[in-house]
Image (cartoon, rainbow, N blue to C red):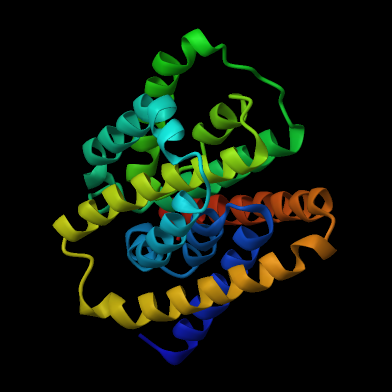
Length: 251
């Protein structure tokens, strides 16, 4: 792996960690979106896995809500794990190159939905079965792209959790996703010594970016930062989808 690519990986994870430090999420989404510019989704995910798992484990247990979250969201988490395992071959199979296009579409979809701030509410009596369907759908999408925000994020925001509880719930959700993804990548032989150095760089830069993001969080206007972050995701998503579509059909 060239020095230029390693510097690019470092910059990506500094930015992704900073975003996660400020708003509590975004590390896999930002890093997968940016890395997909220069490598296939499966290779990008192999680098994302270690910092993703460790930063999300930290977020999972940084609060008092863990047991309540698992009890409430177990159908979502189970569906997520099953969906990722069922669709694990898509990222390394003959249709893997379409994953970059799908990542672009997902980034645009996620950003537009988030910018519109839809106020949807899921009634408590429907949480379990809706959560199972949402988890399975997200898992299938994640198995092909490594991105886990659609349709899970709108669902979790519709549950009416307090801010700190929601942030911890996101940690639980993304921890399950990255652990199952790690199993898929290991089975496909993509987690090996070639990902060790990029993984270490990604991990160090992720925690550095998170520390900076948490430090400046109180000095930033969260809504304004979040809005520009989502707009940048739309631009990146359009670029990824358009560029890869051109490569597939016209290059």
